Amino acid sequence: MQNRASLDEKSLMSAKREIVWSVSARVTLSSLPETTRKTIEKRVKVLADNPFADALKGRFHKVQKPDKPNLYYLKFGSIYRIFMEVLPERIEVRAIVDHPAMTELVKNIDRV
Image (cartoon, rainbow, N blue to C red; front, side, top):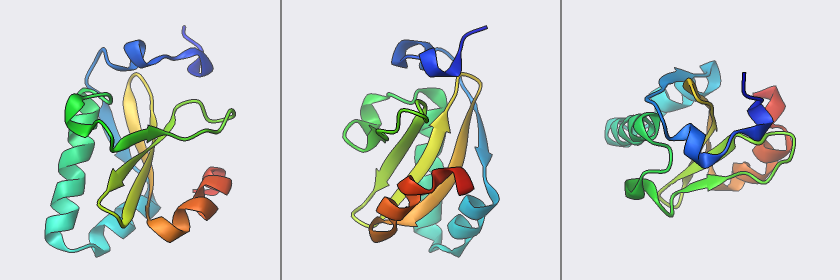
């Protein structure tokens, strides 16, 4: 079995993943305007097929936290950031935050 900390981009690209939304991410998503919500869901589905797809290049970034090697965020416009763990079998959407709240969330990601 492969250690989570040793996963690299190539091994994460190999298979379609299940999408798992945290309660807080689902609540935030449901509070957004319909067009925003649908676009976020569509982009997360693209990530489920291939987290490193060219279609999302420049929008999908690794969070620099040594204790969270599979934590990434997807930029959505200039306002929202969607935080997720990308694992071989699933994508766990942890939180959707507005840009100013991003710094605080990264500090406290284990609480989400």
